[in-house]
Image (cartoon, rainbow, N blue to C red):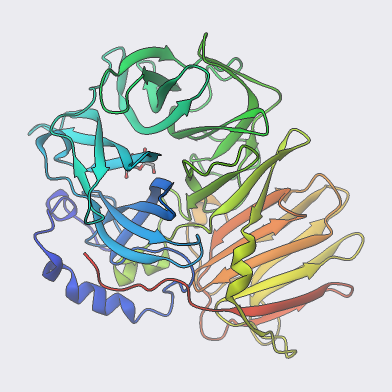
Length: 485
Ligand code: FRU
């Protein structure tokens, strides 16, 4: 694995020619995604600035141009007419001001009349590397590139640690004001959310208080990427708590969880109805963010980073890694989130799967499950060995997913086996495979499981126990992957 110096990781991009050769080289990788947003070069991580504006979906990702390493972060911008087909639009935000000199970190967007307003964290560092996180804003310009405000909207609070970032903006109709939720850490290193408010999107921001979440006062060391949304009258709080182990999640200390409850903007209290749940039970799912301005009170549209902080993936050797998940629809039912793939994805279905037990590198599978226990192994070798093994245990109400049999193993210390709990008997699976990722939706979105997977050229078979019925389609290309910087 390459060792990166700080200088290399924090190099400023002078122009497109700096990364042209790198782009050409990684284009040849067999693991480039065909219908998932991925970095044009280097590393992509969190989704940022996700919103519908004047009929176009805007989405950015945290981007480090130089390689599969976390360093100087840009926002790279992609757009879509339908959340299925994506086009590269070039750099969204570059760390080119003093207040964001060491990175334009995560944030959100909201469509307000003619304006698409972006909120992000300006990661400022002094010479001695002391960090000051600023909450900053930009407006989408006529050339489809965001234009920054001259000054940040506000700086950090000194009664919390330096970890204050990832502004998620929401409009509250009842209060007639905007709120910004910021992921934060208290001085004693417990995670929390800070809330700011203003009647106007670009001025007048004041601190409203720390969000109270009864029962979650000591839950992880930093809450990254908070997101709050009202779906069918229930409030949903989604966040990514770090620096903590959680039951059933192996050795991972990074998680993405949600609470359903009631948000009281008078007292800034989010009262959960029940326990937290994992947004996704897979190995690689983090920093999820919902799209703003979708105009439907009964659903949200969510996208996440297929990856985790601190993890390493096989394409690191090729100087790139990361991908965004498919956007998914969220609904609230029976005190839980139901997460389903978008119906429009069906337009990508191409040729039906051949009946010879082999899998194309990019495909969708629909699996009807028998009653009781069963096993399916995807991307096995010809003799049926290895593969991504899914074993359902009806008594335990869980589907165990094991990726330890693959040729390319990775993140072994974090764990290669995880359970996807399924509370109702498992009847149906929808599986979306792209060249380096697998997303599984169980029982109409009751539970989901997302993982990176890097099958080698001998791993393209599948096996299933009797009674499992599987059909599927090759998926057509939906990302252009052009060199636009
Ligand atoms: C989450 C995160 C954010 C931060 C960004 C930096 O993965 O750590 O909290 O803004 O990544 O890239």
